[in-house]
Each structure stands twice: as C-alpha cells, then as structure tokens.
Image (cartoon, rainbow, N blue to C red; front, side, top):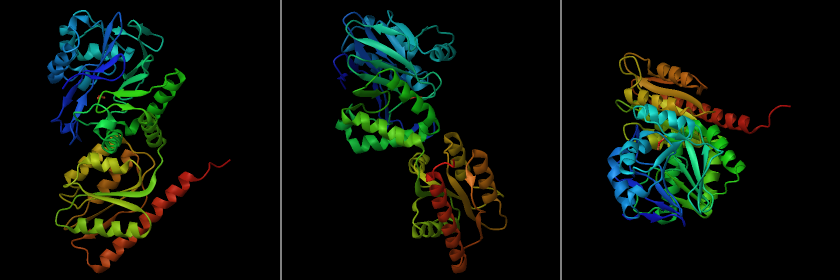
Amino acid sequence: MQPVSVSEHVTWVGAVDWDLRDFHGFETPHGSTYNAYLVRGTAQTALIDTVKTPFVPELLSRIGKLIDLAEIDLIVVNHVEPDHNSGLRDVMAACPNARVVASASGVRGVAEYHDGLVIEQVGAADVIDLGGVTLQFLPAPMVHWPDSMFTYCPEDAVLLCNDAFGQHLATSERFADEAGLDLSLEQLRVYYANILLPLGSQIAKALEKVSAAGWAPGIIAPSHGVIWRGDQVGEVIAAYQKWGSGALLDKAVIVYSTMWGSTDELARTIADALVQEGVDVEVFDLAATGMAHIMRELLDARGLLVGSPTLHHGMLYRVAGFLQYLAGLKPADRVAASFGSYGWSSGATAQVDERLAAIGIEVVQPPYTQKFRPNAADLEAARAWGAEFAAKVKAAGTAAAAPPEA
Ligand code: FEO
C-alpha cells in the first residue's frame, strides 16, 4: 500500500493491522490501523506518531517511498500507549536527525517506557515552523491517557488527534467516505463505547480547548482507522458531543449467561415484558456475543439487567468477567437489576447486585430468582418483574429530563 496524501502538506504513512482481533480485551473483528503522518514543509519534515513495534518496518518502508529517513527532523509523540509508542526507539534509530517532542506527561511517559529515554516537551504555547507549514500542540489529558496531545496543522486545517475520533477498522482505504460511511461511523461508536466512555467530560474539555485555540479542522486524522473530512468532521464532533452528554434512551440491555436454559428463558420472558411496556431491549447471551458489542448497545441504554444462574454459590465466570469490564468503563446514570435461576444453592444474584453497586450503578429492585425451571406461573411473575423494571427505566428518564428545582 502506498503512502496516501491527506492534504497539501500531510501524508498518511502508517501501518494496517489486518489480523488484530483483541485490543486489550476489546474484540476487534475489523482489525485496526496505527496511523502516522508525515508533515512536509520547505525546510523541515515531521513525523506525527509512530507505531506498534512489529509494524515499524512497514512504517519505515512507507516513509522511504517518499523521502530519505535522514530527512526527518522531528517526531511528535501524541500518546505513549504502546500501540503508538512501543516502536519509538526503532524509529529514532532509523531517523538519526530527528528531535522528539511530546506533552509534559508524554515526556515522562516516554522516559518510563523506554528506560530513561529523554525527549523534549512541547505545549500550547509552542509553534514549530517547518517552512510554509506549522505545527501547534494542545495537551488533551485523558483523551485517552494523561499524556495525550493533539497536534494541529493550521495551513491545511488538519487535526492529528491520535485516539480521539479513532476506530478499530483495517481497510485498504484511508478516508471514511471511501471505506463506507456507515461502517466507519459504526466503528467510531464501538470505539467510543469501549475506550472513551468514562472520559466524556475530558473529551468535552478537549473539544472546547480546540475551539478556544481557534482551530477549525477541515480534516480529522486520528491514529486508528479512517480519516474524516468535509461534512463528516461536524458529524463526528456532534456524535462525540451527544455521547459525552450522557443522553440515554428508554432502552435496556439484558446480558446473561445460562447453564441449563432457565436463565435464558427468564431473559427472553423479561425482554418481552419490557418491550410490551414501551422499553426497547437488546438481549445478549455472554457465550454468544462479545463485550464490545454489548457496550456499543449500552452506550445509549438507561437500563441494564444482568442474569446469572448460581454455580458454586456465586455468579458464572462470564458474568463476573462482564462486570469487571463494565467497572472499567463506569457507565453513569443507569438503573439496573439482576435475575437468575438456581438449583440447590442460590447466591448469584446477590453477588451481581453487590458488584453493580460497587461499580456505582443503582440497583433499583430486588432480584428475580428462580429455583430450577420456571413454570407458567413463574414466567408470569418474571414478566411482572420485567414490567416493574420497565417502569423504573422510564421514570429515571423522566427524572433526568425534568428541569432542576429552583
Ligand atoms: Fe491507541 Fe490509547 O492508544
């Protein structure tokens, strides 16, 4: 694959990871990319970001199709997470004339990751003139780590924002409109739900700082997936603002695991009751669906129901794994409850409720527990329990929409 021109001075030279199927526990069925960009002025050339170590030869080979590596004067480290930074030392070795810059926290991160490697700090007051084209910088802490930084090329109106606006999407196309807008926007949502969900307020601050700095990007070039241009720029910023606002729907995600089918039967019965009461549902057996897709649905769902039968006095391991994944992403303002079957010993639902509360999710009603198999009367009771939960989902939505008391 050849380097791809992004704008007059900016060229994509990154790497495509076609085979990536797991990104620290986040399933990535479409693979990903580690985007890096060359910015070429009349006097100097900068490389924005590097790549994961195994992809350094691909990066260097792509740059080598444009220039001699010795011509790189500057390497900008926008983020020290290893998917972008683990290859830094190898890239530096191949680019002997490059100085390396990062945010203050990035400088510390590079030193810690690379055995004391010393690089230079840049911040919002710095402008690096490459000759006819400049680079500006904006620390964007927690988008995605404390060191995260945005780089902006004002002459071309290109925002190089690393993880922000990224998607885990490996394609032979570099722009969202070429790869398919629906697929690109869908992967933007999945990425946000699984990486950035707990960071909505920091993302909002970063976007405010972009506006306050007078940056008006016409192209958003992230370090994962495809590049946004034209009307898509406003569209993806609006999507981030919507998700960051925490607006939720009268919708519930029902997630469960089952041993002999009783908890599965409860899940489907409860789902029917919610739909009957006007609450949309998405139902997931954890043995069949990965957590990234479940989080994609929970992104705008106000309700969460977690089902587990009891095994060895506690919840099934898949449910425990999901709750651990959920704890990291800390969805706010959800209402939740648990359900499940048991045989000779109960215990799973109490454990689920305790874990939900520890995560900070409000458990709004006692669990529905079922000994052995549900009969017709039990299913009616489960249906009533589901209807009660539906009312609580809707009531929470009404409360959230009400103006604050004077
Ligand atoms: Fe793509 Fe936070 O690393």
